[in-house]
Length: 98
Image 1 (cartoon, rainbow, N blue to C red):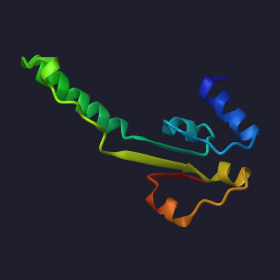
Image 2 (image 1 turned 45 degrees about the vertical axis):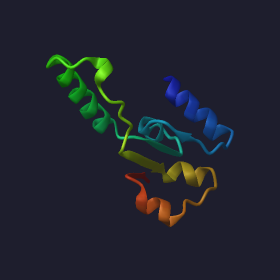
Image 3 (image 1 turned 135 degrees about the vertical axis):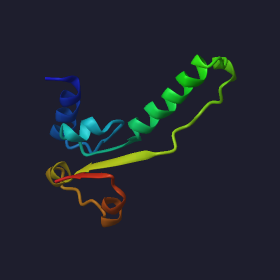
Image 4 (image 1 turned 180 degrees about the horizontal axis):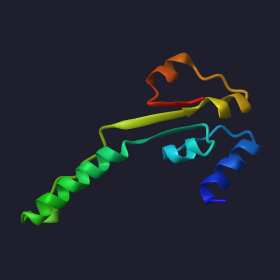
């Protein structure tokens, strides 16, 4: 069993509603995740690599913060925990697992 699955199993067994830092936890059975868009983060990293390879000094590059976030909700887990997810939250979620 992977550690991710172990953590999710413990949370569900003890009826702990948990918000995870990656969507993979929700796919493994976790309740919900709120995390940065990984594709966007890789795109930003690639632009940094490009600038460094073109001669910019890493210390001169600006610090960037994530601008895009993703929300994933597992309704099956919510039902198992006896939780009702508000419709407004379901509307803004990027991924809803039923």
